[in-house]
Image (tube, rainbow, N blue to C red; front, side, top):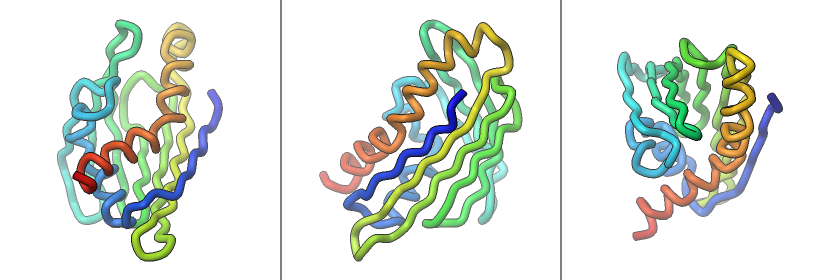
Length: 144
């Protein structure tokens, strides 16, 4: 699968955007492909997360270890799930007083050919739209 990099400058602080992205348990509220999400073993530097995803009638769940640098970076590392591998990072760079450059990177491959054929293209498209989804969430939370 392709490695996907997306960046955008948004009219929110790094702290606001970081808080939207790190709030994994809220993902089902605004990511249509995410059915359930939970977090456990949370410390100041990391947490475990589990998400249930749904594409074209297929349901899967996966677990990650998320290493965090508050307001700066989130590094997502696969622990289990339908992927052969999955690595992802979010970077938050302040640009002026109330703007932030967000960089999202993801690289993944599903564990078997059928899942890769069915879910791969959809997951690729969803990945390309991640910043947009989080921008809309930030607007809903901070511009109301």
